[in-house]
Every structure is written in C-alpha cells, then in structure tokens.
Amino acid sequence: MDNWDEIRTAYNVARVGTVSGAADVLGVHHATVIRHIDALEERLGVKLFQRHARGYTATEAGEDLLRVAQATDDQFSQLVGRIKGRGNEVDGELVVTSLGGFSHLLVPVLTAFQDQYPEIIVRYLTSDRLFRLEYGEAHVAIRAGAAPDQPDNVVQAFHRDTVTLYASQAYVDKYGCPSGSTDYAGHRFVGMDDAKSRAPFARWMNKNVPAENVVFRSGDFHAQRRAIIEGAGIGFMSQLQAAEFSELTEVTPPRDEWSTPLWLVTHMDLHRTTKVQAFLGFLKERAAAWT
Image (cartoon, rainbow, N blue to C red; front, side, top):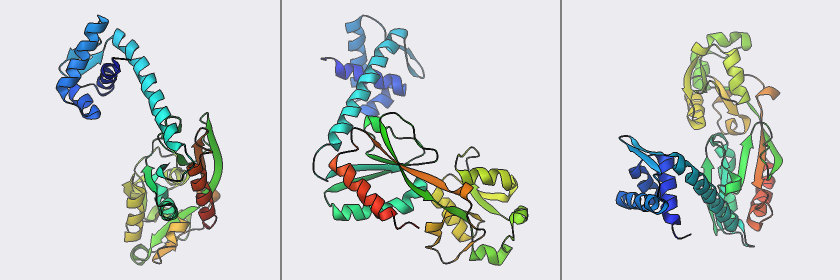
C-alpha cells in the first residue's frame, strides 16, 4: 500500500479534527500533514475534508475511506500486541491494568515479579476506561464488579476486596464515632465525586448518607484514603490497606453488599504465552495471602 502514510495521516486528522493535533500525534510537521491530505485528495479525485475555522471535518467520501483506515489501524495494533506477547522468555514489556484503587494490592506484586524476572519492564496502567485486550493494549486486566463478558477473553474469578467504613483517631477525638447507621446524619463523610459510580459501597453511601454530609469528594482513591487518614471524615477503605494504619478505627463491620469481586482477564491469543502464565501464577500465589 504505497500511500498508507497519507491514509494514516488523513485518519488522524479526522480523529483529532485539526492539522496541528494530527501532527502532534504522528510526530511530524503540520506542513507534512497538509501535504499528505492534498496528495491523497488529488490521487483519489475527491475532497476528503471540509476545511473551516475550527479545523477539518470529513466529507462523505472521507468517512468511507476513514472507516477502512480505522479497521486497518486496529488490526495493526492487534498484531503488534500479539507479537509482543509471544516467545518463551519472561522478558520485555508486561502491561497490567486495573482501577487505581487497587494499586496498593498490585504494586507490591508487580515489584516482586520484576525482582524475580529482572528482564521484565512493567507498565501498570490505572484508569476507569476498559483497555482493549483484543487490540494488544494490555496483557492482563484486573477488573472489578460483574464478570466481564467481552468475546475472546479468558476470565477467571480472582479475589473479593472487602471494604468497610473507617475513621481516623483525629476524627473520633473531634466528632466521636457513630453508634449505628441512624447516627450517620450527624457525621462527616469522605466519598466519590461521581454520583453515578458503580462501586457498591459508593451506591450505598449515595442512598444512606445525606449528600450534605459528604464534605470531601474525590475521584482519586488515593486522595480519598488520605482524607480519611487526615480526619476529613468517615469513608470506605479496603480492610487490607486499613490494616497498615494503626490510627484508623473500623466504624462498622464489613457487609457483603460493600465488597467488590475482582476478575483476571486475558485475551485468548496471549493467555497461554510464557510471560502471561508466569505472571498469573505469581499473582495468584501472592493473592492467597490477601486475607
């Protein structure tokens, strides 16, 4: 495909919407982007974009071409991910993804795995978005909630993260400790900033704690934990992590409805590779001690 560079350039212009943005993505000068688009339009004899003050918008012909370009780009990404996962050696990149709230569990495991296999380069990606294993975005995903059902993925039940409400000693000294759920209206809480969070404990808090009592809100799990430790309010924390802080008081025993099931997810094309199997076995062995 002699003009793939031009098609790839047009694809990125359509995706980003501006010449300068596409140039940044591709790592080229903006003049190169314009030259590629002009050459491609001349070769095809059609206009692929409508130019306007805010940027570029694909025409109908452009949309047809770009659908093919996106599919091709995705296939290349998938191929690269599969190639990277092959081989009989435990080396190269290991890409693991999870919600940021589970980093306290996973970082020690990843560090110990790297110590055992020093040729491994760890990339630990934390985000609310689902990384696409079928396109090689990660080797292993640790996902929370309902069992993942994406096709071509291998899904294994992994761990149940038990959480409950905690308060710091500084908070208890200043405000006391609630004697039960009927007492919550008189206390201050730390919670999620996203009212639509699917976390079971967040849904419970939205239903059972007056909104005005949630005085510290954040989408960052680490910020929430620190706020609880600093005495900003009562909040949810994993029992495993809370055990690391002697100044925390368990406000109420954990409930099943607050706990979160975790799943190990791998793509079927990478699941049996030496590197992925070595890490899965190592992770499961370490997780057996998470009680």
